[in-house]
Length: 180
View 1 (cartoon, rainbow, N blue to C red):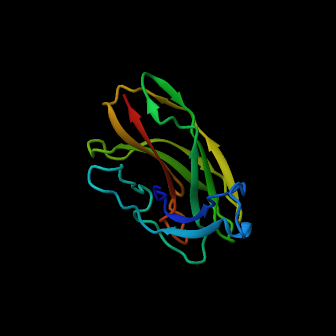
View 2: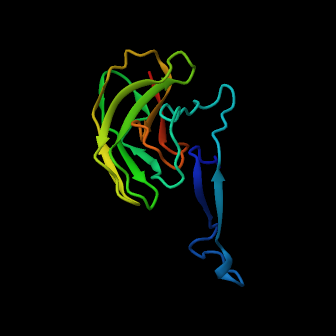
View 3: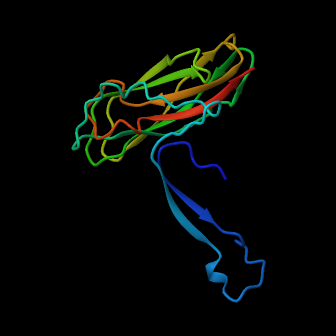
């Protein structure tokens, strides 16, 4: 099993005999759960691509403010070859009981070997996110794969306007991809 790469709380659910196919004295104890906390991204040299947070630098913090998060990215292919339109769907949330004003979701990519530093691709502005609210955002990226072959990281990061918020550590979601 590989540990989750994204920072946050994860629930591990293990159930070796979920359909009760093996006769046992007690069928009620087949499953177990464990809460895992991923606190930081640990990348081994030569391993996965490093996860950066291009919007966190200079972020003002406010313990009573909103908390922008990007829990997921979907619709992004893992392998790109030729020229292609990519249409990622990104969920951006305000994970706090405090409403948030206008914010900006920005999209970046960089190469895993460090030759291409974070490049901004596009952005999308939200007029505001209420307390405990989420929105799904879809953009169209015309990707010309004239980029060098190799491994890259795509990131969607919330709060590019640097509104004061509780923490900036969970503002990005990541999706690794390969260009051939």
